[in-house]
Length: 292
Image (cartoon, rainbow, N blue to C red):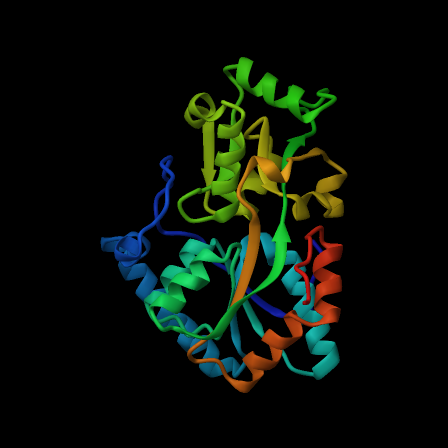
């Protein structure tokens, strides 16, 4: 894996996987995202550890959806080259990052995999300014080398094989915490496949882990962010089938400043929305919002 000239942390969820989907009401947001018992204790511990990391490093702490890990690391590297300043990136599912923010983690910028999580934080008055769209994501069916689906000529053929071959499994990100997982469920349901495949789905903590499950051969295929399929180490060992955007809700990704945002955080936020970062994000396979 190519090393980036930025500080980064990868976090994993302490919340169990769920096969149920659906909207999360404002009144249930804190209960759902904070969890109980050990999950809550570990969440508070992580928040405290993050506070120490920020105090020591003196660098803005940026929460980033896992699907953006490669793109945002390159953006942060470009920011460092341009300004001489560094940021610390923490990657995870948007739901888990939101939970950490609600528990007091000292993030200063939140780059989500959707608009909904930043908007909900705004409802709790934890943000500064509007939620801005910085990327529009796409889904892909990722088929690894050696999979029974490897010979499929078209997306529809691969999905039909998944449906009829009852021993085959698929990986997606947890739809309760990851917008790309929710979109994957919508795409399968659109084709009448979810009721069957939900019983044969490996639920990953985030998109990055769904890619790992798929690349390891633990499943016959995964539905992941299209951006991952463009990585050389993934492209060389897989077949990727783009999933039509009309099969799922738009993956418009929002970024927002949080209440504790420093001047450095505000500068990085502005850089993400600027032309140099936009070019990087587009190169990683994302569509860009209009600048109007």
